[in-house]
Length: 93
Image (cartoon, rainbow, N blue to C red):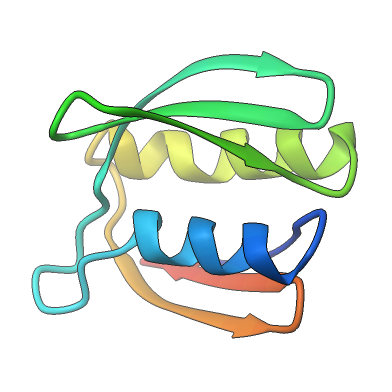
């Protein structure tokens, strides 16, 4: 399954990409979604730190939250991520 998430800008896309995926282990650093505030998603990482990612709009926040939840729940594994300007493509199996 593949999803494209549009971030607010390239900086937010780079931040999301660096937090989302551990390539060798096909896992994510994301432990949970703490909060969603309009077009912003606040995530908790495995080291228990919290980070805010600003996406383009509320639709992208909902799409990201729905897509990543099954990975957090260990129902799916991440395969790859790719950044194209402010868009992150995420593939899970």
